[in-house]
Image (cartoon, rainbow, N blue to C red):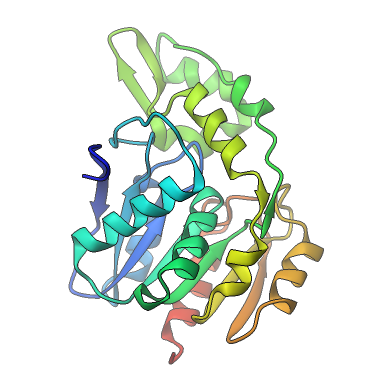
Amino acid sequence: MAGGRRLSYLDFGGLGRPLLALHGHYNEASTFAPLAAALAPQWRVIALDQRGHGESDRAHSYERYEYVADVAAFHRHLEVGPVAVLGHSLGGVNAYQFAARFPDMVSKLIVEDVGAVVDCDWSFTTRLPGVAPSREVLAAALGAAAPYLECSFRQTDQGWGFSFDVADTVASQKALNGDHWNDWISVSCPTLLVHGTHSDELAAEHARDMVARRSGSIRRVELPAGHVVHHDVPDLFADAVIAFLSEPC
C-alpha cells in the first residue's frame, strides 16, 4: 500500500541479487519478463506496476513526487537495502529522481531512453482505440504499435481494452514534462544511460549532454532500436545491462 492505494508488482524470483524495474507509459511490470529471464540466475528482477498501470490502483493524480513516493514505498516493502534500479521512459525519470532523492537506497542506476528534459506528445494516447470486441480487433486497430502495448491488453465485460486509463495517462504525461536536470545531475551512483539510435523520444545530442553534465561514474550505450529498447533488441539490451551490473561499484 502507498498513500492508501494498492501497488502491485511482479517478482520474477530466484536467489540472485535484486534489480527493481520501472516500466514506461502504456506498459506494466510484465514487460520485463524477457529481461528477467536473460538476467537469471545472477539477478532477480522485481518489477512494479506503477500507479494507474497493470494491477495497481488508479490514482487521483500523477505528479512527479507521487511517483517517487511510490517507488520509495515499494523499496521499503521489499526490504532489500541499497539496490540496482532500472527504468524505461516514465520509469526512467522515476528511477533517476528516486536515486537523486534517496541516494543511500540505489547502488546502480540504469536509465532507458529518456532525457533530463522531457517534452512528451500525448496525441498518440488520445488516438488510442476504445473497447474492441476481441483481442485481435484491438491489435489490428493499433497496427504497428500493438506489440508494444499488448502486455497491457485486458478483457472486461465490455470487451477488450487496456489496463491503463487514457485520461490518467494523459495526466501522467503532462506531469512528466519538464526540466529535470537538477535531479539528473544530483545522482551519485554508477549510471548506465541506454539510448535507442532510432528513438523519437531521446535525441542523441541530448543523451551526450546528459553524460557530459553528470559527475561520477556514468556511461552511455547506443543500441539500434527505437524508444522501447528492451523490446526492439532484447538480447543486446540484456547484454548491456548484464555488463554494467557486473562491473564493481
